[in-house]
Amino acid sequence: MIDMSTNGFVRDARHLRLDTFVRLRWLAITGQSAAVVGAQFGLGLPLPFGWCFLVIAASSWLNLALRIRFPASYRLSDDSAALLLAFDIIQLAALLFLTGGLQNPFSLLFLAPVLISATALPPERTLALGLLAVGLATMLALIHRPLPWFADGRLELPFLYVSGVWTAILLGTAFTGVYAWKVSEETRQLAQALAATELVLAREQHLSQLDGLAAAAAHELGTPLGTIMLVTKELTRQLAPTASPAVKDDLDLLRDQVDRCRGILSKLTSLDGDEAGILQTVTLSHLVEELVAPQRAMGIALDVTSRGDGIEPACRRNPGVLFGLANIVDNAVDFATSRVVIEARWTAERVSLEISDDGPGFSSEILLRAGEPYVTTRSPDKTRGGNSVGAGLGLGLFIAKTLIERSGAQLTLSNVSGHQATGAVVRVSWARHIFERDTLPRRGTEFNAEVPLTERSPAPI
Image 1 (cartoon, rainbow, N blue to C red):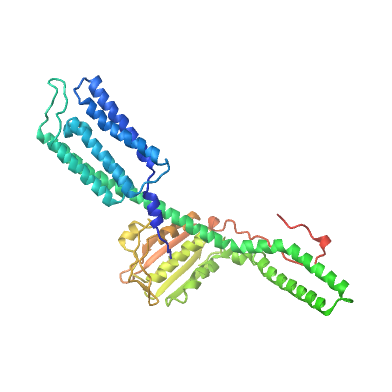
Image 2: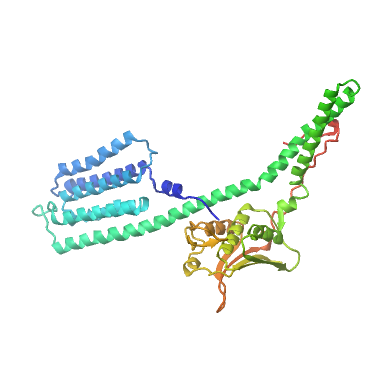
């Protein structure tokens, strides 16, 4: 099962760069300045021009101070980002107070900081910013300077219209905040789960390459070890008549240790030689047995069957597929009451595995959201072998599905059909030509220290 913490992923995903806030604020400053200048000089509306630009200048001064104080790559904490967005809400409220309050059509811009917070900050900070925006909108509905207009310099809209604008801001803040948070949270969870998948796959690939590294090391060490053996024999032949007992003992010890090294290297070389069919290319039944072997001591009966038409298919060892299938088998054993059935089938066109158990089966929520990250049915009181399994993170099935489908397979989830029978069923199916691709084993290089030095070829690079 997957045992990892996602706190680091969550923290990194939420923290935004200061440069993002600075750029957005410069965009807001540009828009506010254009609106004030256009209304004052383009339309001839009597605005409190000096006060408006003083409020806009406050945002400019803050931007310049932040740019000077922090580098562009600086990432804000949740509290710092919330304070900056709160400043933007207050600055907008001050500008609206000078230009008609909620009668000003730009009052809907209250939604912008709340929307940014919903996509980047935790829900409690977004709620606080939403309450701040609604509270200031309530004040502006009651207290504000008149909306500048052409005829007598002021325009008073009915309070019913202002109440409608206030209601729109309230509902818009609530709806857009919740909607944006939900969408961004799902995107963030998917990115975090994919990152966790890559980490798991990298670890499994690293472990699967150890046998190849051992064989390569054996091949590279073969030539110098052969040289040592030949030199030892020459020294023994030349020094034997006149050598002291101590020298003879040292030469015998050296020859024994070389023979021991030869035996070790022969075993390592065999990992990449004729036995590569065991470690690198496996038949379907061997693959199933490798998945089942670690689970036989868990107290659950495991029924394994393998049959099909024609020659049994074989595949290249894929650490990602092995990890994903092992995770599914592990889940089946965890939730089974007494029995897990694993059926391997093949035809000339398809290769499939079906893993079923007699447990409670998948819930309707799991079936509807099959393979999504952070969806789990594992509860803390679930036991296995008398020990608590613990609550899962909901990444296991997601990672298994991602790794298996990456190999070209199709994975489907269902429940056992029947009036009395219960249990979960997981089916994995490949096209046979995809399952059997890249199945040629690598040829190994045997170590032979008896070949004279003059007949040895240089070791490959």
